[in-house]
Length: 355
Image (cartoon, one colour):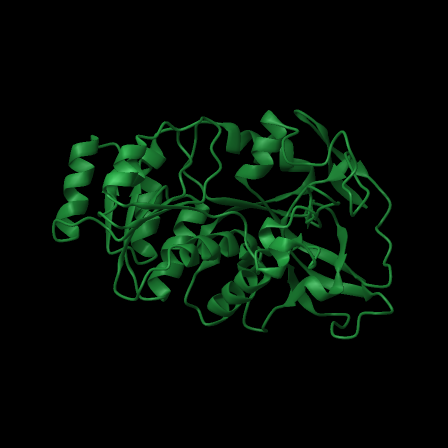
């Protein structure tokens, strides 16, 4: 089968590899779509950072070369002998973080913080391939009214859902989203679906247009100077500031901006990965009693929740699919487009069966 395999910094290759074998607890999937995300770009351009490279993962026993791809949906074509609740022909998405279920963090429900977790495409082979295997108990069946294209964005939607949940907002609260790429726009929809007033902030015209289509109460052009941006947001919130600011941009200065924009006593959620280290005035956080919360990845419940939201048509993931390419085009088309200065697109999906 064809697969995209990571060897190291700026070294990924389309290769013909053996199809994965189904063991007792696993299911084998024919991959329908797999998304390319910013974490893939970080690993390609700056890595190896998160992937098991020099040392094998302590649970999976695997290290590079590894098949990439962690945002995927597929159809079950074979099940292991111990899998009883998933049948052949079921369309599914992945819970791509397999926790140990035994450690201090897992005992407290922090499965995404498990130090032994096997993460798809980072501690084990991923899904940018014609076929993949995963633990049968950790794939989530899709309702009939959810298309495979919609489901392909369940993973970034789960990341967004986790971030919104970490804010602990109440219905009717105001939330500003800094950075309206895929995760930011998914967070916007999830927050709206749960009763928040949502304001979108971005530099890109296409992102602001999409934010309007997806239900933002107002949009703010981040090309304006900071005082004007803040002034618009204060006017929208009665001179108080938003209850929550979610930083999905990941810029060097965006965490500082988030703290500046949020109301006194409000909450800032950091969901982006930062390649440049932000500088904080911690007195600003202390004097105004701002809560700054990190949000890493997701948990199984987040995946289940977003599948339900997609099924109820409360979030529109398919509107964020900008292009579908074949696996042979991933580097030359997909990666190069994401690394270019052109940001007027959202998710690029890979269809391994597409020629």
